[in-house]
Image (cartoon, rainbow, N blue to C red; front, top):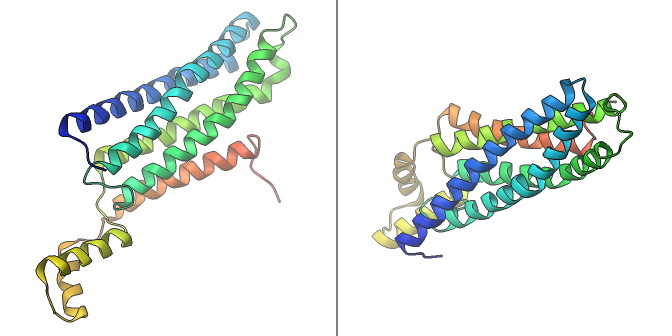
Length: 225
């Protein structure tokens, strides 16, 4: 996909804006969840959960979908590609997982908001649900923080797909008839192995996303044997 420099900058700017907005909104969302959990005043808890439902549906969900779509567009229209670098793949996996979990999580938030809107709402009765909302919001914040770190540091390291594509391109451009082992040694010399910290950031982002998904699918409780 080829875009003009102006259009590419537009999509990049939009992607940064919605990504930062998603991160900022989840911080406010987590604050409301903590308020709803710690307050002893039922009216305060009621307003907190109603506000969480509003922020979730009208801020978090649109921003998460926009950030995911924007990330795909930016990756496919820049030199980074979508499957060339491990940090981009890690971002894609973590962002997709966070978006899916958010959409499922909104069912719980809607349920809590419906309970909070009732005149007979008693926050103490739904204490486990209140804890679950805090844990899910904190987990989402950790995943987005890891994704942000990947975007900033961009740890080096190309996927096998990208390495093969680069090797084929070099062979076609140079017309080299060097034996495979000699050519491979020369090409791999220019592509340094990714540092350990790069792997750590990427693996932690994916691990956080997986834990986030498992924790959500198990209803806020890890399966026990």
